[in-house]
Length: 638
Image 1 (cartoon, one colour):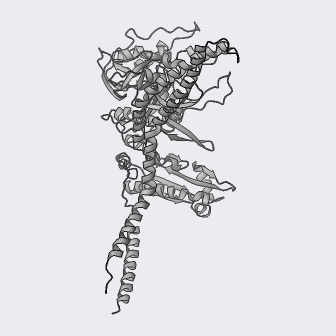
Image 2 (cartoon, helix red, strand yellow; image 1 turned 120 degrees about the vertical axis):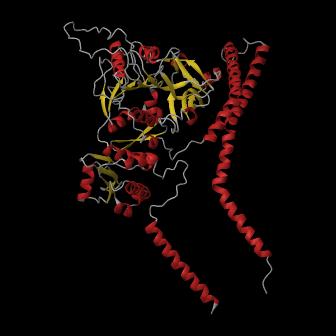
Image 3 (cartoon, one colour; image 1 turned 180 degrees about the horizontal axis):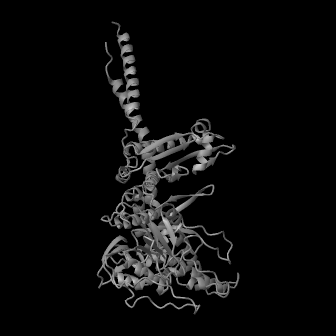
């Protein structure tokens, strides 16, 4: 038989087999996948599997996506890939739910009844530029009790929280009874009135508070409350500044009766902005921004270091700041911390899987020597840390000054802790007397006084209230009137993990703590820290020399009185010329040191560029040349 015919037949048979395998794999292996990401971002977590296994009632999921618009309009085509990702993930949920989840795929075309249903369900339309059409890409879910949950729009930039958002939706429908949280704060966490002396918009609520209200029943607890509502399951206290004794007593009794509490105190709260006083501009700089619950802490067996902040060279965040010359510089700010996994307690479920926490001007928590409670650190500084007085950052924040004065205490410092154990009341004589402005006002009737707890208390104390504010951990983008958070740290995850832990539910914790799609350049950060250690001391010395030369230069110049040099001696003129030359040389050395700060990072960047762009093409060229050389040396067949 002709060899060419055999070859052609073989190719045809191979093609048929390939097509058959492709069709079979598409039908039978649609849900099969291999997840090679470090944090298994495309594999359902144990928390999701646990939530799905506990579903008792059916849930209907309606996934809205403008399929036809995506095919016709190139502006929408970019969402198709993310839609496939979302759809495939939801299909995994359905497959794991034991028949409890049902998925409907819906395409709301413009001006259709389905579009009206999508809008009524709370799905947000994204307007198309140059058109009256809206693109819809969201999820509406309905439980057996007609309870509803919705994800208005799937933002591709939030892919790292996709599984959490979906599981939270399913979990909420499966657990319709919401936890009641009491929110007590001296900060405008719910928004508030703008400063009448400043031109500014109405302050918005902190994003973390909006997120709390989505998942829980949140009740405001005024800072002058005399008792805590019995319906409150957990009390969240943020920056309890100057709380009156009556309110501290209410918290004391709430905890003794079995209520759970999470307290964020702060020795220097940066978001606590005192009111401007036009008659005394300096008042806002000298006003106290600290909060503490000394009386309660003493009863609970803990203590917050007074007027002290934690500094940490290993975890300090690098910041931009103006120098004396007016230029911008970059240096680690020792009181702004970016804590990494090595700072977290891995024996605690709420912190063991966190990636990063960002704190600003955090305090230091210690266990009292005579404490009868159990003190469990949740996160802490590295051993390469120390303490600094609040006054060092109160009037001027100078990263270089803090860095130059830093001396390591070679000891870790606790920034947050969990406290458990039986305790006695911080008010052994009962409720403190309350003075009323109205003598005819009847005193509020309080429950019977508890002298001690019948069961172990459950309290968490964190030494930084700033960590919950938007500017510290999350960037807010907007889609119309909808705020879209872009987290850069796990601060929000930590709070929600703590709440779930306090109420005895840990299924959602593993979801919030999963790694993100964006990962830090750890090697680059290590190089930056090494460069700081090697060059910052030399830079500070040169800067001091330059400032001293500038001072002497100004002294000599002031004697010249314009262009007349008769008031200077020959020695002073020579010194003036020498100082000018010294300043030029010192500036040159300073520029070299500042360039050296970037040298290793730039070198690493060049190597990364080489590996990412040029290595593979070069390997292909070398491989092709090798084959060509080997073939050219092969003797021709007869």
